Length: 140
Image 1 (spheres, helix red, strand yellow):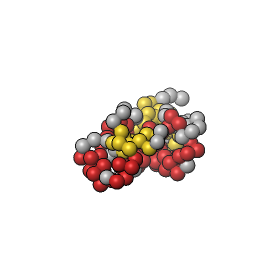
Image 2: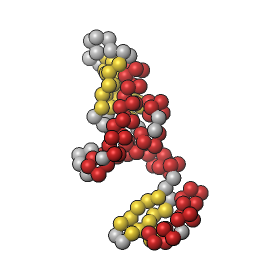
Image 3: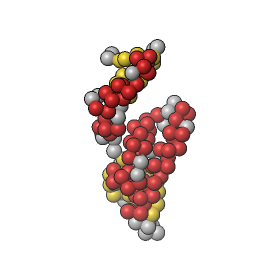
Image 4: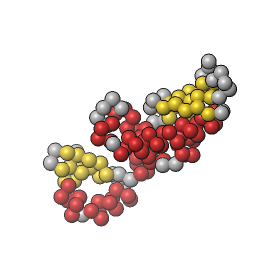
C-alpha cells in the first residue's frame, strides 16, 4: 500500500494537507492501523452511488407518509412535499445522533447506515438532503 507513516504525516502535516487538498487522498499508517485523509470532493465522489430512496404512502386521512428504505425512518405530512421535508430533517438529525455515538452504532446492526450518515453530514443542509431523496409512489 502507498501509505506514509504517522510520524512522517505529523512532521510534514502542512505538506500532507496540501497534497490532500490539491492532489490526492493520503493513506497513513500507524503501527498496524491504516487511515485515509481526504477532502470533501473525493468523499462526495465516493458517496455519489448512495442515494436516499423513499416510498410515499397515501393515508386514509389524506396525509402522506414517506418511509426511507436505507434507514428505518418514516415521516408523515399534509402532502408528499411536507412529508419529504420532515424526512430530510429526520435524516440529518439521525445522522448527527449516530455520529455523536459512532462507536456504539458503527459496531452494531446499523453499520450499513454509515455511507448514508456521512452523505447527510457532508451535505449538512435539509434542502440538499431533501433534493437527494428519490421518492416512489406506493398504494394503500
